[in-house]
Length: 150
Image 1: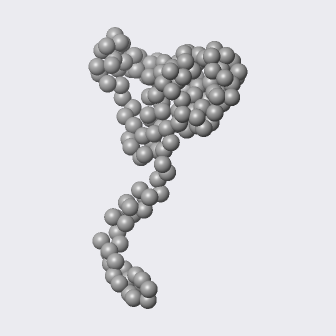
Image 2 (image 1 turned 90 degrees about the horizontal axis):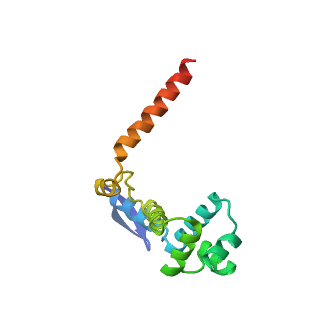
Image 3 (image 1 turned 120 degrees about the horizontal axis):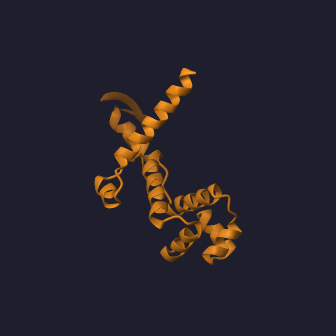
């Protein structure tokens, strides 16, 4: 902690300046995360990755084109039923969409997002994710080594 002179109404006072001040200013600088914006961004990203139009998705989801557009732009707060319908139309599990939203919110809040899959999850769905990952990694390495040897 360092003390610095600070002038307040012509009176000089000493103020503690240091890490605590930096932490306070960083917290103030963070933007408020608006959940509907993050949800809309994720839905738009998924739709665009699929190369689909708003019209196609709105027809499949049985939602008006204008309303879907407003949801994607974060102007409307979508109900859980509406989100479920949109996710079904996009052929994406609601849980996956919400997971992506959660990860984006965590990043915006400065929280570390774990890049691991819980062991209970991998056991429940019957895949040995570590084995699959190691197999993929070995395949990529051997392909890379073979192409590098030529």
